[in-house]
Image (cartoon, rainbow, N blue to C red):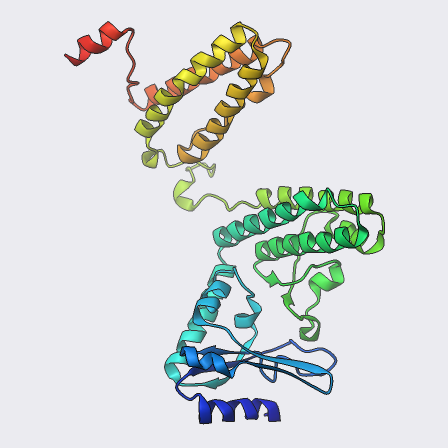
Length: 363
């Protein structure tokens, strides 16, 4: 046992025996043999007083940070919202009791279960993609090289995380090369556990350009290429339908018994006025208003494709400011399609020919 590890354990046992649950070391978390991480990385406080054990200091040029990581924060690691390595590569150096040990090992087990869950990691990959796009929105307006380089690395780190999750592993740093991605050497894995076998074409080629270029415009274009290819790659790896959703011939089939077609009818009845308004704008060549309503309707089509399991309808490809009849015709066709879907599933549209008809049928 390293003298510093023994020093911390002795301090816990003498001063914080009821206040600290665990002392944790992290394997593969050192540089140049400094044993940083293996000596200790963090502790899990059991009480508020336990946080007082926290201390930072430097010995022979090596910084040591004895810091608290709560059970709540460990749950974030379980759910890939914080560093997975603090669980995955963890070694228990001290435990207050068997219950604390068991709780910690259970966290590590659930982390591995999440990493093996296709649906779970797909969702986390999408979240990483959103984070990358958020940074990109500011990077495209930057003109200073050092700022662009910094933001490009942040973006590439989020993309690397997304791809690592899809490969059922993780990384806390940007991955720039195949040798870095496939490296199985524990000593090379500070903050990462790559083994990223499956990545978009040209991912590492573009990543290398980030290291080679000192041109702001080239860096911005390269980041765009990385974003575009990674986004497509993520969407291509959306989890397949479960066996219960597969038809006898092996093709994917949606579970129509679970679709709320009455809800779809309510949606149509609410949106029917938008169709009527869109027809009016098209007939009267009111381009701006027609386009606005068409965009609104297109967003609603994307919504019902997810909510009610209908096909994804394409309206906006028909927009031509010089010929709005194309848009009107397409909107009419899609409206008829919605009506047919409802009729096929025995759902009656709550529609009346006039106010008199409305009152007559409700008297």
